[in-house]
Structure formats: structure tokens, C-alpha cells
Image 1 (cartoon, rainbow, N blue to C red):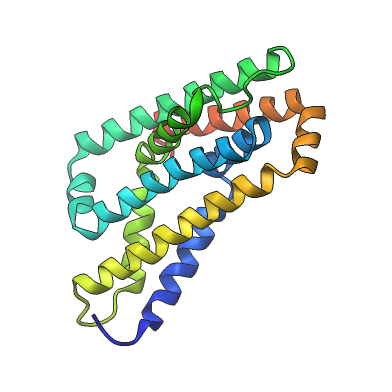
Image 2 (image 1 turned 30 degrees about the vertical axis):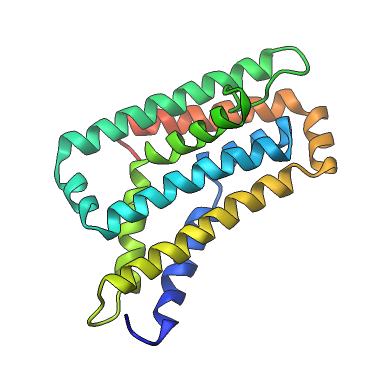
Length: 208
């Protein structure tokens, strides 16, 4: 590994923008945190972080290229991811139409381990995560890079992902935010259902 860590800046910034931007993962942890509180949101965030970091390891070890090159594997991930997002849309729609006190959008799982698994699956079944990791790693590779540089990029970006998802959980579980959610729960859960449904439909149709 080179002695200069400046090569980490560009991939870290690119990864931060990609991971922090609104999408199914950030929407899921935000909705869970508003509906069920900080502990539930952090459980979801932990699963999302592990799923995202797992794709980073796959990309850094070269297995990502094999997945991308083998069309059936990528197709399986795409279809499973699309179906999972449609399921999340259904859960959100049920919450929007259900009685007050329902679990909330994207929170069909019960208990911290269920929420952890839900977050883990959400990112593991996202083929775009692998593409993003490949771009980030390529962006940060200095000349003569070795295993140390790959490991450093994956470690730094994985830590960023954990901080981003955890930050979403803390922010959206604040009492003022949860109070606002309680007043507009049906509208927010309905919007979540629309976003998850659109994302899932795009994956299933091969447009994402």
C-alpha cells in the first residue's frame, strides 16, 4: 500500500454522494425510524450497511466482474431485487391504508433481527450497488495499487455507508420528525409505496 492516503478522497466523495442520495435504502431506513423509533432504524441501518459492504468485498476481490459477466447471475439478482421492492411497496401500501399504530412503511419485519435481515436483503438484491462499487474502486486506484489500496477503499467507503445509514436513523427518529410523521402517516406511507413500487417495476422491466 502506498504511503499517501490522498487516493481515498475521490472514491470517498463519490461514494458519499451515491450512498446518501435518496433511494430505496435511505427511504427504507428513514421510514422505519419515523414509524418505529431509533432502535428499529439502527437495526435496519446495520443490515443495509452489511449488505452494501458485502458488495464492496465482492467488487474488490474481482468476483464482481464475474457476476457482471455471467448474465444469469445478474438477471437473478435483478429479478429478486425487483420482487423485494414490490413486496416493500405492498407493505407500505398496507400501512398507509391500515389503522393508526400500524408498523409503518417498509417495516413488515418484526424485531431487530427481522429489520436487520430486511436491510441486508435490500442492498444485497440491488445490482446497482455492485456497479457503483466498481466505479468507486476504479476511481480511486493509484498506479501500482495492490491489495492494501483495495482494502482501504472498501473499508473507508463501508464506514461511510454505515455512518450515512446510521445518521438517517438518528435524524428521522427525532421526536419532532416522528410527530410530523404521525400527523401525515398515510400520505408518507403512500408516497413510500409509490417509490418502492416504481423502483421495483423499473428493476423487473430492466430499466434500472
